[in-house]
Length: 283
Image (cartoon, rainbow, N blue to C red; front, top):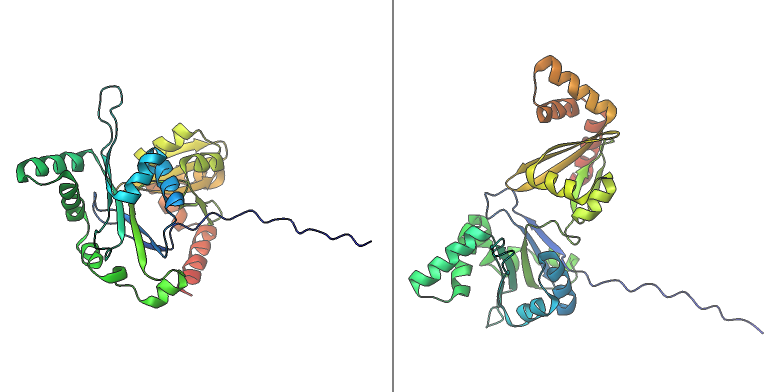
């Protein structure tokens, strides 16, 4: 008798969420967003799960928003409003992609004031406040089909037309960011928890570093973070590299961030890795 060997079942892959990314994070806040779009059919259950976890909104509420559109106002925390509102815009004609974004507290207040004094629905006011904060280039591209991208790029995304766009700023498990390592390599992490685990620090330490910038001493070196336009750029340096930076601080009177930058520019390992990365991205 021959035994038939069953092939082990491969774990089911979660549906891909974003396959078109356009970076506008260098623009002045509040328009410093990453345009994360999907070309192809929307898996609304997966989309609601991801956005619900990212924006800390209950799944049921997020599913309703992605189905019907509308607003979600965050509840008060201890009697104090600490977060703004989440918006999902659905074009009733179906001509424009579904769009989602988060308004901060200041934008939310502006939208509420605009709605009151212009006698318009709050959803419309929220749209006006959000769009006027975006860069002129992005506002123009949003008026064009598929952000003006050619179909060769969309075909690589294997989806056809863009069906929805998330304007994101958060560091969630579904939105990767990179950290420069002591050997010059770039390591991607998804959420704050994953970042903290990689570097052996607490989530609270990671959160503070991302929000405020600065340095965090490690047993074998240091983590350095610069926050520009509310976007953190992180690099890790080993003990030897950190010692060289401290020498520059003592001899030249430099700030620690300036000393780390100067040290990195003169480090052949770091610069060699950077040049290789640039060649690979150009190729």
